[in-house]
Image (cartoon, rainbow, N blue to C red):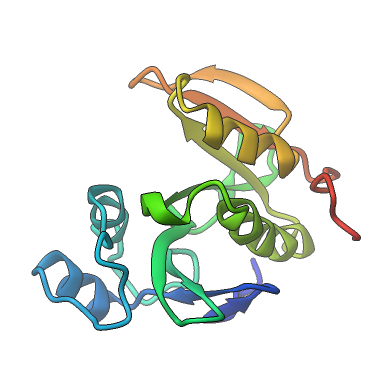
Length: 172
């Protein structure tokens, strides 16, 4: 059995708050919250919450800045872990930020926050990234994604992070 991830994951500067099915439905219906950045949700955020079918800890989360409570993006898994070809439990992650929050280490910090929990659970993480998205590739590299598995059906690079990896700059 794979351990559960808390509803809110806290990092030094962020809160990663799980999006419930009801909140996902409200987002898709166009409802807005006062704590959201003017550019949130982006289309990628809406695409991510469209996958939420049940009340699972392995779904999308809002990225909330701790200092002002503003939601600036989303990060999450595309479902619960499943055994990969080698038998290791594995999950795919995706993330994105509004333009104003980019280039400040927010995506790296959010991803590291989740990776600390997947490491503890013995779950390997993979990600798909557009080959021209240099910023996202840098985030993945900083977080220890070193395995290149080729590309998916949409031409995105598929990268994985070995379970033994530790993010660069991590004190763990």
